[in-house]
Length: 344
Ligand SMILES: [Zn+2]
Ligand SMILES: [Zn+2]
Image (tube, rainbow, N blue to C red; front, side, top):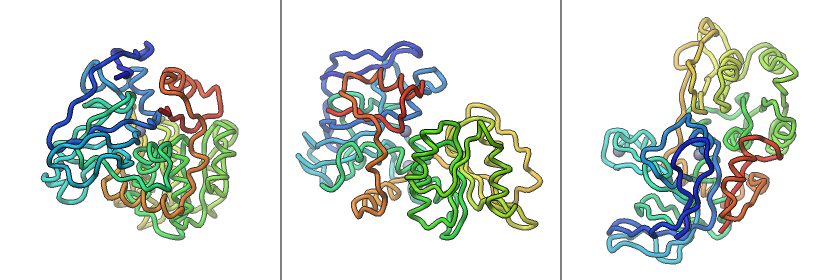
């Protein structure tokens, strides 16, 4: 089969002919129909994140059709449309038992430790294959597996309650869907912050009530103004920069005994400086990471029921061999891009 393999940072990923993977008794072979290019793929591209093996097929937003099943597989059949849960968990450890398979002690990740979706086929454990209802196109199935579910999980980690006010710092693939979910969940005020006008405009379509261009205005001051000087109930950092983390901390609701929840969603590669410590109360600062099997199950049902509209989420549909181009435009923001998906 054809696959893009990653060898080292800062060079184009190589399109190569590699053996089609074989499956064990509990695995399924999936013919990939759509694979999303995620912001975290840029971390590999620039060497900020190192994959678990070299060479590796990266890509963790995957949807396709089951082509072959192992002898013990019961949950899916040949021909089923599926999307991939990229976290391989053991199901037995303490965290899995608590429903937190994203924190499985034996966790491995598809498109990080094991080969991922920038290929024609992928072999995965059958429990990582989630059936995709006919109503959901493959391209949406792909991004459901990361951007959409990670955003859903972040609001749950922030203990979002209906009527809460929400600020989202960084309106990329994940941040934009935080805005969309906040609307679905019943936020009373949603404020989107970015420095790219296209994303600010799009955020309004995804449900933001107010947008702030942080290159032109002080977002903390604006958010204070928009919330009668209270700050927001849930403040989410989805850009992964020191500055946006600082904004997120300073924009959370403060009072004597309670405070808003600050959720660090994006990977942070620099130390987090907490200047707003005076205002942070018990349980205020949280880290959300990926999403759980239960999140993905719920998200699929909500998309199927059309509770959330993903029709504007994919701005670029590219042929499979255009992966390097997709990474480039996502990186350089030369075009108005939210999510690019490789279609096969
Ligand atoms: Zn991702
Ligand atoms: Zn586990």
